[in-house]
Image 1: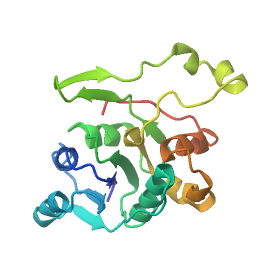
Image 2: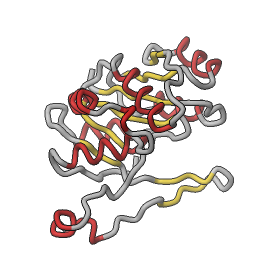
Image 3: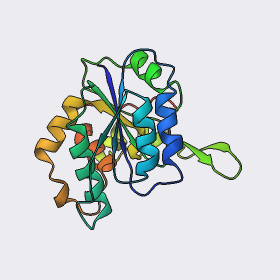
Image 4: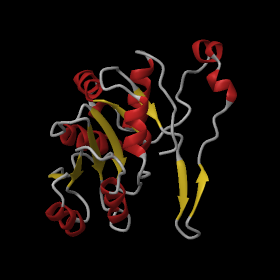
Length: 205
């Protein structure tokens, strides 16, 4: 299997239905799986799991009083059940474009180590309109600036990250989530991978 979508959700009752639907309504025609942490709207999650063989539910209770630690430990617990070679991270209050998996298959090889961050698109619940969250600053693409001053990633957001399962294996083998009470997995993963090769910023997915 090529893709595993990992949904980390906690008390996101109003958004989890839309989140799961966006995963199941992919235009991608091959097999893939959706793995959900069972910490939120159990009724909604189990409704979909009964209907769809793509969905796995993993019991992932709260581990810590620190939200960043709790998120990382939950993802670490969930990803151990993933069989896909490419992992898409998704929070329960976000959702994917229907072209997400097709875009990834077209642009990234399962055999190459990569970490991609989508150019995030926001969604206004009241107006039902999309809007740009981060406009890339040109100086952030400057090699000299990155090397001498600041290589901090241009875009952060757990739901924007796609990477190889091997990267997560290596990341969790050296990073102890309980050592990082105030830094979320999106930032830590980006910093970790930036020391291996350049992060890509492709797609509005």
